[in-house]
Image (cartoon, rainbow, N blue to C red; front, top):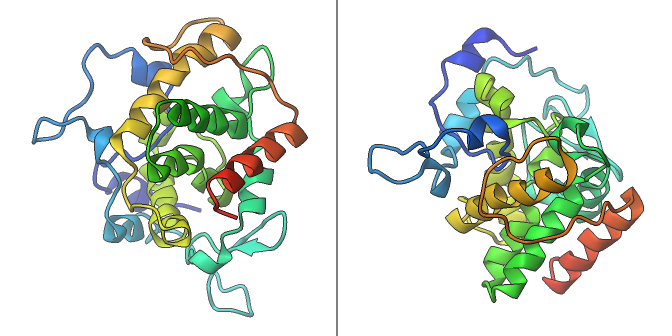
Length: 239
């Protein structure tokens, strides 16, 4: 269980790539003291992420001394002691292909893996760098390994330890595993916000946000979403 101190005494960082109505209803994006949008450079530092889990009861699993873990598709992931060697694309693809966007409240199932592939493909069409394309594909990958899944950002803001735990996984495990920056590029956050307008117009009862990318949801099955995610990973030579 997460103690109140861990949840409420954290820095007010906002690394979450998830956006929904509470994020998009504000006419003016939140800015930091330098006048920049927080989401353009908003990953918490490693020490902040560590602080976020100080209040978590880390029980020894009895064998490794690395604390609690989740059972993944192929093995285990120690979410409080994330390491690059524990990250497997097969686990990420399998999990994200079975997690729905918008807490499952769409007319049809829209999976995080499909969402990620659409962002990747859109960046390919824009001739983005390999690094930006890879970040686009993997931006939600901590959700597959955190034990929280896809948490709506308004909820995540009320429990900052969730976002900080995801940040810890990205900084300590996913980014070094695939040679990616510790901070997601600002363009990835921008595209992630814009795609909400496409997804919501096609699959929710209200339209969230503006400036859609122009993508069309295909509502892939879990197996199809997993396969397309892995196909994109192979194109990036991540596997």
